[in-house]
Amino acid sequence: MKPVALPIRMAVFCWALGCATAAHADIYICRDASGQLNSSDRMTEDCLRYGGKIVGPDGTVRSRILTAKEQAALAQAREAAENAARQQRDKDRQDRALLLRYPNQQVLEQAHRTDLERPAQLIAQATRQLKELQQQLQRLQADAQFYPQGPLPLDLRTKLEENRVLTRQAHDLISGQQAEITRIDRHYATLRTRLEPLWARVDRAP
Image: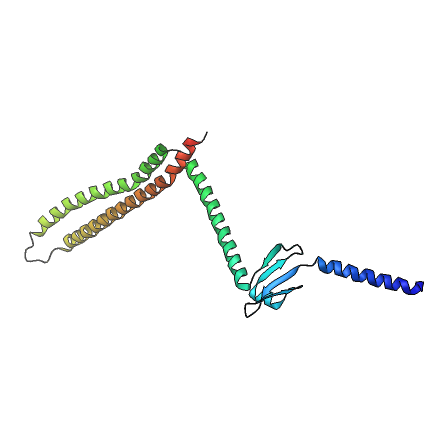
């Protein structure tokens, strides 16, 4: 009888162990295609397709089972959050660099004036050149009056054409440098708008 009793006791022990393991197993509660909730002791195709939740033996929800669509949305949200965090880090780094370069409004205004010097000088030079070209044109036109029936001599025609070309180039240069001044003014206005709250933050710092 004893040789038979040992296998029986082992079988009873294994059965009890299995019951204990099952009692501590998670439960998968998922919907099927019709929307009905079903429970299982393992992950099912419906869980992967329609989602659900994993419930522990104590009834608490351990985790959600996301559908492929929900997983994609979650991944997209994480990526958006990472991008936003990276952009914020980049902005903070740029702000620190701006504060190092322009620690106060006086430094910014001085840099603004310095950047305006070059286009202002070019405009002044071109303006002087236009005045000289206008005086030259008056002299050439006076010479051209000696040939009312034409044609004008080649040398005179050449000088008139050169005057016309140089006058157009001077006007183009002035227009271009005026546009450059507008660009510089806008650039520093943008910098000032960005720097003012940074300066205020530094002033408030203990």
